[in-house]
Image 1: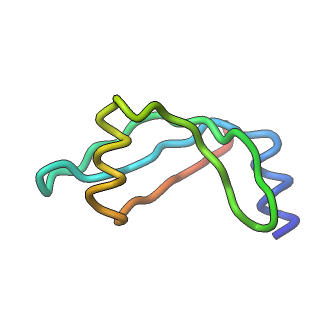
Image 2 (image 1 turned 120 degrees about the horizontal axis):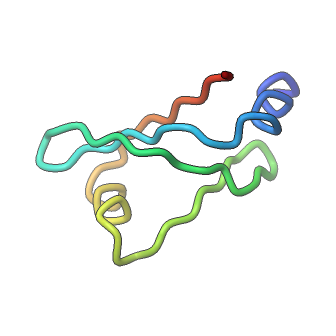
Length: 66
């Protein structure tokens, strides 16, 4: 876990993939913080991504270094 946290402390922007009507939707997302082995991201409850996450728990997030 330490390696992951070290990496994420440098690379805070990743891409979050959700689904909408069975179609993939990918967008940049910023890691806000981590606590007790959990990662936290923020969005507004009036955005499409919020509704996509509520409708389907199947999601992925990907980070990479430049």
